[in-house]
Every structure is written in C-alpha cells, then in structure tokens.
Image 1 (cartoon, helix red, strand yellow):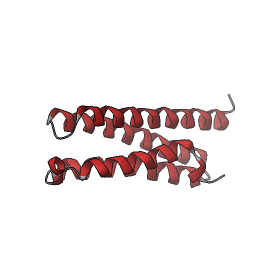
Image 2: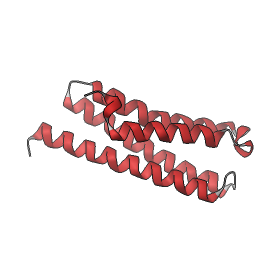
Image 3: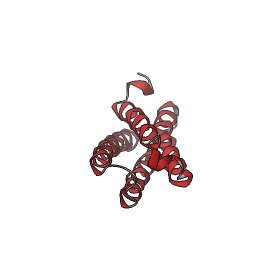
Length: 121
C-alpha cells in the first residue's frame, strides 16, 4: 500500500483541486492573503497525510496526521471568511465544507486506527 491508496489522501487531493479552482474566481484573485492561506492549508492536509504515511515511527505518523486534521479545520474556517466577504457562491462553499469535513473524518479514523495499532488497544 502507498499513500496514494489512502481514501483520506485521495479526498484531500480533490480538496486541493477545488480550492485552487475557487481561488481562480475573479473575486479572490486579488485577495492574496486569503488565497495564499487557504491554498497552503489545503496542500498541508494532503502533504501531511503523505508524509505521515511514509514515516516508520508510529508517533511521527500520528503527529503528522494530527497536523493534517488541524489544517482541514483551518480550510473549513477560511471558507467561512470567504463566505462572509461574499467572495464566492454560498452553495459552492457549502460543497467544499462538506468535502473538507469528510477529509477530516477520514483523517480522524486514520489517527484512531494508528493509535490503536501503536498502543495495542
């Protein structure tokens, strides 16, 4: 198995693609701060899942998976900032929030299963 086989990573990749598409909308192209922050946060989810999977020490895996989950929360929060500034359609943002929520739940499951394996519960 490789990190590309993880359902969480696959959905995180899809999230990155959608976030980059969102950031190409005219209303966000000049808001460099929010655009840069949400892009970096979404890439962080995907990258930390990959890096965590590749680590051999279980505590490092868990640490990186937790960073990925936290970054998913950051993306979700930033989507509200974009919505509050009326910089994108609410329906599009709601779909992205659902996707990032799904990613977060998958990462939580990955953390739990890794912790279980480590601790032997």
